[in-house]
Image (cartoon, rainbow, N blue to C red):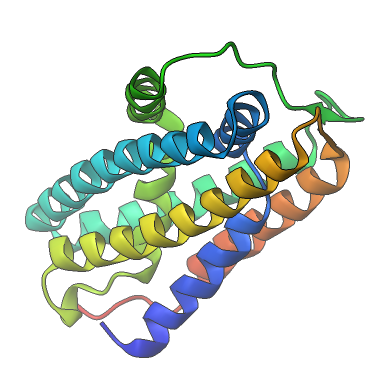
Amino acid sequence: MEFSTIWLFVIAVATLLIIPGPAVFYIMARSIDQGKKAGLVSVLGVSLGGSVHVLAGAIGVSAILMTSATAFSIVKYLGAAYLIYLGCRTLFSTSDSTTSTIPKAPRKKLLKIFYESALVEVMNPKTALFFLAFFPQFISPSAGSVTVQFLLLGIIFIILAFISDGLYAVLAASIRKRLKVGSTLQNRITGYFYIILGVFSAFASPSKT
C-alpha cells in the first residue's frame, strides 16, 4: 500500500476516534466506578473483540474479490453509501438530544470485565458493518493481497483505538465522578464526517484491478 493511503487512513481513523461512542462510554463507566485498572481491562477486551471483526472482514472481503473485481467495486460503493447513511442518521438523530450520560456500571471482577467487553464487541454487528464499509475505501487490489491490506488497516485501527480508549479510561479514572457529554454537537460532528467520508469514497477514482 502507498504511504499516502495509509496516512489518509490514519487521519480518518484519528478523527473518528476523537468523538466517543458507546464502547468509550462503557470503558469510562468502568474507570469511574472501579478505577483505572478496570477501565484499561475493558479497553483490552474491546480491542480483542475488534480484532475478531478485522480477521473476519479480511477473509470476507478477500472472498468477494475472488468472485470478481466488479463485486469488489460494488462493495466499495455500498460501503460509501452506508457511511453516508450513518452520517445522515447520526446527524438527524433526535434521541438524547440534550446530554448523554455515562451509565452506572455494577462492580465486577477484572477477568469478567475483560471477557464481557470482548464478547459485547464481538456480538456487535455494527462494528462488522463499519469495518466492511470503511476499510475497502482504502484498499486497492492492484497493490497486492487484499487480505494483507485489510489486516494492515485493521492493525492500525486497533492500535489507534487502543490508545484513544486508554486515554479516555485514564481520564475517567482521574475524574472519578459522574460525567455528562453533550450529544448534539457530537452527533453533528460525527454525522458530517461520515457523510464527507462517504461522498469522498463514492467519487474517488476507482482502484485499478
